Length: 441
Picture 1 (cartoon, rainbow, N blue to C red):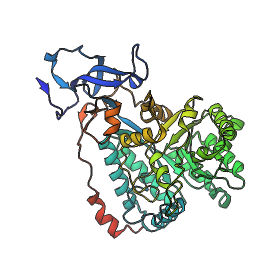
Picture 2 (cartoon, rainbow, N blue to C red):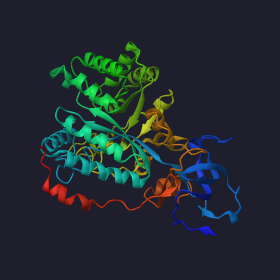
Picture 3 (cartoon, rainbow, N blue to C red):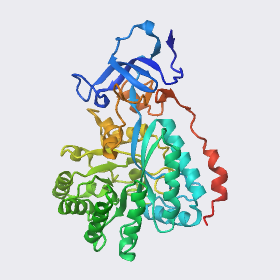
Picture 4 (cartoon, one colour):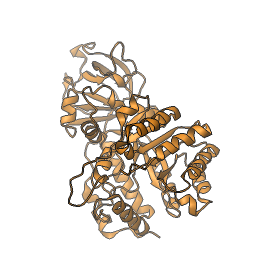
């Protein structure tokens, strides 16, 4: 007997008449990456054992008939800020600007970011992401002195507690100008990150001695065997060219680790010849770029009483044409850097598609929230195929148009072949915590 859409799986089952993007299939056969392929899926004890052409299984075999609904692998979110998330009720952005966000977060961090406070908010965000279907998250962690002593040990605890639900990577975050004021800081934070199995990162901008600071970052990464992940040129000032400086430093030093650069907004306002020069270097250096459309649309070109003209999203099409790996990610959620969001990568991907024109054709852009970030992180995730964990998202939508028109429509999330609780946490759970604050020691 056929199962209904609402059926609950417990590690073993069959899904018939599923529609899967060929680009996330381990074995796409003769399909083109842009194709949608009709498949039957069999999983046992949490593992996919067969991905076969649709109608391979007789109706008498039972299971769920998805009626051509889309199936995606569990999602991979390469750039988030779990430690900042959900402070908006007590620390809103007064004017929606980048500087307003910086000042609001600085005030809230110094007053409230105890281990208890950060834990409550990080876990709330993780519950949201998990319910939406995300299996892997990289989060940047504010790592100024004193705060790093609170957040990094807590992060390691939470990573252990969430193992098997959401796999976590941590990246340290500080303004690169900090290296001018404290010549001992970089060694200390690099050692802390190394001990936690994390990634070395910083926010970069055109400050005096930028190249010296970048070289110090790269050498610290090399000494501690760390990858790098930078916040880069998050401004619409066309003089911002730290992305180029990062690429030049990587090439000059022969850096062999992985490098990710997020935002890269200034490319959208620079002359074509400058863009070409920078992107050629980025491609040569093997740097991956992540765009954060929700936050960039929220912050960039905001002037009170004026409609924004320039939206600040970076140049994904030009990057991909050079073979640069590109990723779409969530970034901030309900904090002064972005008042909105719920760590729902499907919603973010729909926003990116509309804003960056990742359509006509849709092609294989869905790799930007699945296989590509998983590969960058060195994690086996984002694929559908025999032998893979049955970490799947089932949709009623049957094609890209239906999904992108209704990204918040019905979905059913499976982890290791088991249906998960589909109820999102209620924002009311945070009310007492927000009103009371959480005075740090």
